[in-house]
Length: 141
Length: 141
DNA sequence: ATCTAATTGCAATTAAGTCTCAATTTCAGT
DNA sequence: ACTGAAATTGAGACTTAATTGCAATTAGAT
Ligand SMILES: [Mn+2]
Ligand SMILES: [Mn+2]
Ligand SMILES: [Zn+2]
Ligand SMILES: [Zn+2]
Image (cartoon, rainbow over all chains, first blue to last red; front, side, top):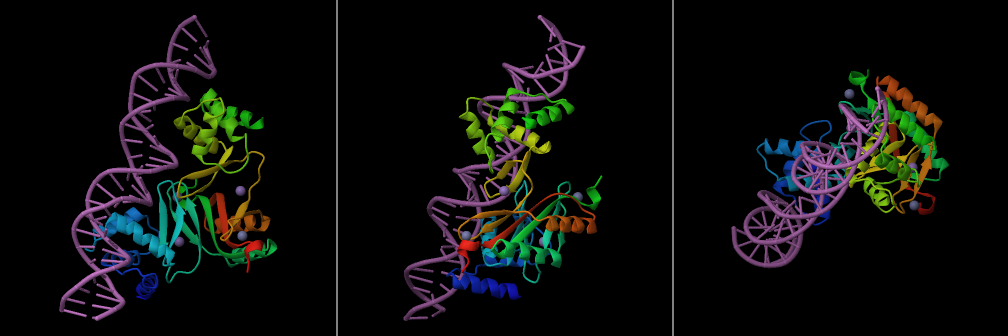
């Protein structure tokens, strides 16, 4: 898996070690698709044969974000939500305030428009996050 | 102040009471401009002659958000950030990764485009937050 | 003035996430 | 493969924003 190589290189470059626990977290993160909360990830790891403490899960998650393999999608009332990024292209999110469902979308027009706005403000944009909140199809009244 | 009338009507319509504490929170929220954290608001209220417990500050803040006089701008690692909204129009932010400068912007086109995207996904958008990160004019290389 | 439901303050509680530190593990050097 | 320094781990204590239960208080309708 490419993500293992990326992680290994990242760790090596910082004088950090590739431990069983870190491997377990990375592998669990890439074992399913979609968004996840740290506690959910932790419970999956516990029930998967491999092991890593809650502290290690959180610590490894930070490393994965730092090296770009994982991205923090948003922050809810409860906590953070993440997603793995390798092999996935850029997109933004709509989040349902009622049921919490997250809908991914991408719009070329919207990306272009943002470039224009940056230009107009003499700003060199390197990343962005657009989060639309409201009610999803199921929850509209 | 218009915001007092709005709040009074909102409370009345729900069978809720306009207390000294609620009045103190509203008045403090509108006594300054910019973003704020609940704890900062609480400390301002404590040092302002009026009184309201921490619990009441949080409870009133929820009511103010519910009636549209206050908006939750974002959630940071520490907690929520709010701003009062009456008399202020919607805008989004560019944040410089180097110097931290925050540039506010608004684009009618961008708002329209988001409406279209919501429609396409059968999503009823009620709010959004777009945050563009990069380098500002001063910090570009 | 009376009455009742709403509200308050306090302290206890919750929960995500961080931190401490002794014991363990990695891995580069040999 | 052995060694040792440095990194990492797990368990649970801790931090901190925010919520909640409840007895005492208060708003506001009649
Ligand atoms: Mn996503
Ligand atoms: Mn702003
Ligand atoms: Zn929904
Ligand atoms: Zn700058």
